[in-house]
Every structure is written in C-alpha cells, then in structure tokens.
Amino acid sequence: MRGTKILLGVTGGIAAYKSAYLARELVRAGADVHVVMTEAAAEFVQPLTFSALTRHPVALEMWHRDQSTESEIGTRHIHLATWCDIMLIAPASANTIAKVAHGLSDNLLTVLALACRRPLVVAPTMDADMYLNDVTQQNLGVLRQRGVDIIPPAIGEHASGLMGPGRLPDVEVIIEFVRKLVDGRHEDLRKKRVLVTAGPTYEPIDPVRFIGNRSSGKMGFAIATAAAKRGADVTLVTGPVHLETPRTVDRIDVETAHEMHRAVLAAAKKQDVIIMAAAVSDYRPSKPSGQKMKKMSAEAALDLHLVTTPDILAEVGRVRRRGSVLVGFALETENALENGRAKLTKKQLDLIVVNAATKDNPVFGSDRNTVAFIDHAGHVDELPAMEKIEVAHRLLDRIVALRA
Ligand SMILES: Cc1cc2nc3c(=O)[nH]c(=O)nc-3n(C[C@H](O)[C@H](O)[C@H](O)COP(=O)(O)O)c2cc1C
Image 1 (cartoon, rainbow, N blue to C red):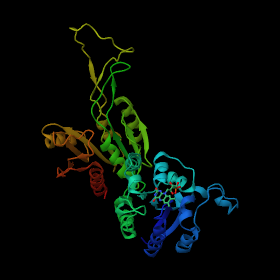
Image 2: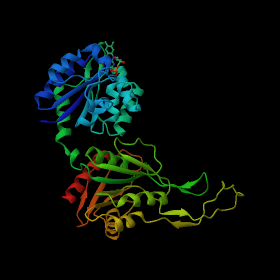
Image 3: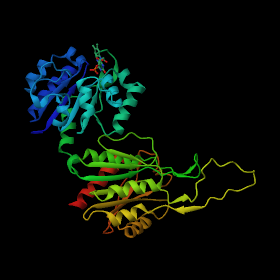
C-alpha cells in the first residue's frame, strides 16, 4: 500500500471508533490517509483522533469561513476526490448509503463520494434490522450496479443486543479487501479508451410497437463496469434497458440499430478496445407506420416487410484504429463454437465471446453466464458458469494479454 492515497470516509455509528484503528493500520501499511467525517461521526469520535493518527487535518466542514490558500478557494470541497486513489467509507451508515445511492450531496463526505472518479468502497455497518430492511438492500443493489465495491458486513452481536449481519468487519479484513483492489487488475486499462455496446435494439413497427429481443444489457453493463474499474475511459452505447449507469462511464442511449450504428461509428476510430455485446436486431420493418396500426378482422393476417439493418460489427472492423482490439459476441442456440468461429473470421475480430443459449444457460436477464472465448488463432477457452461481472473481468484479462 506504500504511497496509496486513501480517502477514508467515516459516518455516524458506534463502529466509528474502530475506524481510528483502521486509519492507523492503513498508515502503518504505508498508505497516505485523509479522513472525511460526517457531523454524526464527530458525535462518536473526536476528529482530533484521526488527525493525530493520519497527520492530516480532518475534512469535516463544507463551508469554510477562512480563505485558505488562493488555489484552494472554491475547490477545496472536491479537492480530496481528485487527490485520492481510492475512497473507502467505513463504517457506512444506512443514511449515507441511501444518499450516495441517490446522488444526494448535502455534506462534505457525500459531495466527495459523488465527485470521486476513483474506486469507491463501502462497508455497510448498522443494526441487523436496518441492514436487512428492503430499502437498505435496494440502495446497496444500486451501488453495486454502479460498480461500487461493497465489503460484506460481519455477522454477530450488535451493541443493541440484536444478532445478525451489519457489524463492521475486522480491520484486517477491510485492509485485505482494499489491498486486493490496489494490487489487483483494476489499473491495467488506465486511460485506455474502451467502447462497449449493450442491450437490445427496438425497430419500430408503428409508434407504439416494435421488433426487439430479450437482451437485458447486463453483460455489456458488467463489461463497462469492469473496464471502468480497471481505469479505462469507457463509452457505453446502449439500447433500451433498465440498468443503472456504472460509475464514471459515459452512456449514450439509443433505440434502433440505425441509431446504434451512428453512435458507434462516431466513436469507434478513437478507441483502443471495442466490445460489441449488444444484441442488435438483424431486421427492421421497411416502412414503419406513422400512426398506430388498427387491428383488422379476425381472419386477416398481417404481413410485415422486413429489411436488414446495418452490419455495425463489420463496419467497425473497417474503420477501427490499427492496433485496437475488436471483440464480438455471438449468441447461438446450436453449434455454438462452430458458428462463433465462422463469425470471428468473417468479421475479422480479435476475439469472440460465444454464448450458447440453452435451458441451463438462459443468458438473457440472468446475472450468470456460461461462455467460451475464441481468439483469432483459433484457441478456444471454455469457462464454467460464473457471474457476468466475473466473465467481464476474464474477458478484459484476455484483452489486456492480447494488447501486450
Ligand atoms: C448510539 C447510536 C448509534 C448508531 N449507530 C448506527 C449505525 O451503526 N449504523 C447506522 O447506519 N446508523 C446508526 N445510527 C444512526 C445514525 O447516526 C444517523 O442515521 C445519522 O443521521 C447518520 O448520519 P451520517 O450518515 O451523516 O453519518 C446510530 C445512532 C445512534 C444515536
């Protein structure tokens, strides 16, 4: 951890006193630690404790009456968000978790959490009933979807006498979690430009109906989340989905294959890595009706005339930068590897991710996936079933290796 700049956020809970020990151990491990506290946290522990342990003043007040140095005026409230390598909120109260999940920023800690583009780690700490409450779980779910790392709380007896989850884990566990993040693979795409597509496309039949598919966008969003965590500047072009935008990712929403085509081609030339995970419709109605189509008599059949949509992957292959890595996805219901290999060659991809949609691997909407990677040399790597976020990291590991 030598030289790692850690912004430690402390919120109001009994476990705030343990953060003093956490701060001391982080400093002993070689980290440079700044502490930001909420007003409630300062009811539990004196800021002086933290400033003595970290040898830095504690950030507490958003409104400074003194005018400090000229360079700090007007920016002091966000300075620490750009200074740090990692922001760790431990303990994180239910209140602060709710605020961070919804973008509220009414104190210095939440302002910094909102402004911080570095990895954000949260250690939820509260009574078991507060932790297990649906609303807290939903808020944690929102954070997780955005790519925030959640340290699972320890289970045991609380100060209130309740038994259950919600205790701050041992300081050693928290430090190990942070150490893994710092040592880990998250910086191996630092400043690399990564374009990811996700979700389905909707091709209008009339103003209210469309041809679409069952893609949830989860795989593409997981890739965007993982790439952002590994330091990449990520652009995510997505069809209609119900997912939170991962932290620090630039999101472009599109609806049709044509819109996706335009957005992707506008961005493709600048990218170091392009990962096309969207399930783009191959066909669209040739002449969508301007008005809602009326139902005809019971016996009448409706014929829709369909035409092909642009082949985005093939066009990206033609315009992409030399040296960039292009990855495609193939969803197959039969002969998955064979069809994947054919697509890899035809579209001149560096790598293809093959999903076989079966009863055991539903792919769409699921948080898990079973995939195989095929590279341009024909090597096949079949992975066991795993969380989509882990698939995303494995894919990025392969891409990093290809770039090297
Ligand atoms: C004695 C005491 C202990 C508390 N412990 C916790 C706790 O462990 N976790 C929590 O989420 N809230 C706890 N609270 C409630 C928070 O302090 C309260 O929600 C506060 O508004 C949190 O503010 P903050 O998120 O700005 O720090 C406790 C309150 C009291 C009085």
